Length: 124
Image 1: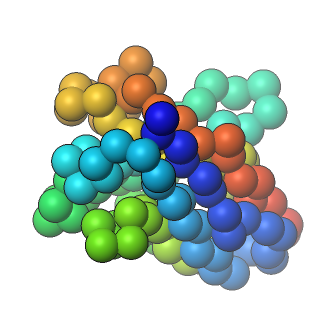
Image 2: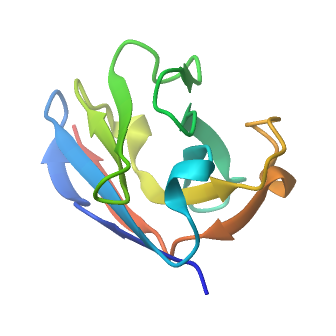
């Protein structure tokens, strides 16, 4: 059984930084593209960033491009999201997800496993 566990969330002031990590167990982590999504109260879950299985290609939403960096360590079965220049509108629960070999990264239906989420709160 695949499990994804996020960590690293917290509260930070605007302009600050946080690093989220998702640890995967079960399955063969290095075969799958991985993504981060986020969801704020009353809003739909939205795509944040994706990284290919080898880690050689990354994709970002326009909202975070230039501020967030996704990376992975296949030896440790982890995927990370480095977040800089955080804004109050980045406040959300952040989820990591495993792409089930459907490369429509922004489509929630493309993912077969999700973590439980970690809260990020950015105050102004």
